[in-house]
Image 1: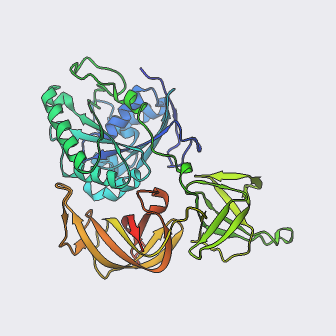
Image 2: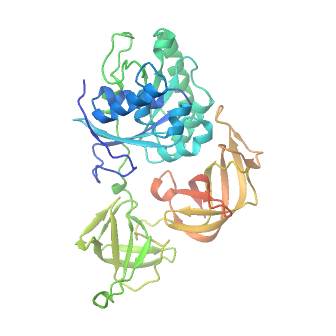
Image 3: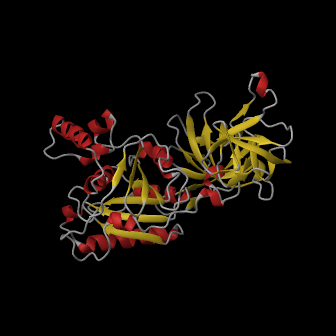
Length: 437
């Protein structure tokens, strides 16, 4: 059995620092009640990654709800409404490590009403744990989550065919489900799929081999996760630094200081590097990089720093400092895949919204809805003129002010955007930028 240690942090930050060589980010996906939270609870418990007080707390919660056994799903389903309804609503992050790898695992909801939360959890993942109830097989929400995961840049899927104990450990059931999903995945252009038969409730093939399903010849789930390839770390992509705040101290001794604060979205910034400030396109060099009163020679993706430039330029919140030899696009129109998340009504041509991308914000007009995706067939309806709740489609947006963007396929950090309702300030859509002009 793999021995692991757990970090009890659960606020969504990265507790492992910038070393991405041994870090794998995972997100669960699948339909409601397929056992995602139970699987994570079982994974943590069997790998000895839970504290005594955690187990005592979920034992009390299980007894108070009249359950005969400890419900391991409560390790991630922490909201009272989640435990009362038996469903996941919010995204829960868990961090753990084994001697071979570090993990950040996002437990996302399967209910169609909370698809937007699933998008949040999957947006930073390297791989998806896609759960399927062996009794029901692949259903519409399974396909929706799989397509959204692919759209969000995930190319590695682990298909966990769960609740095999309820189908008498039948190999034919597993083979049919895994073959059917592989056919669906190939239509999405995804060929990297591993399939594992498991029982999350009983623990079969989650952390250790099991006598049940002796016909399965692969590794247990945790062993497989330790060997998966992670995605390219953001340090290896072109430098992008969205400016969040301009620092101008009021104290006399710092009256000449002008720094631009933010987090490095991708790449590495070095003192002396030639950079361009967007959207103006003016080039300059980096005069210095500061962090908590210390001068740095370089800053890599994920670091929060203040950048000083050699020239006095018009740089404000929403500007982007980027590598001069590999700049992003500066566009006034974008084409994007949009997942619509508003319960107030559909997205229609002519709607006016606010678009936010990195620290940049501007107004946008829905100029065209080019197609709507059918998640069951992966065909596009070219006659669609609106997107309803949880529907995905191709949308063209006309921007009121130019934005510096990359294609989502090239950079998650600068190729993603959200759409905001101007009246309520609620997030109503998530976008993955395909192109711009």
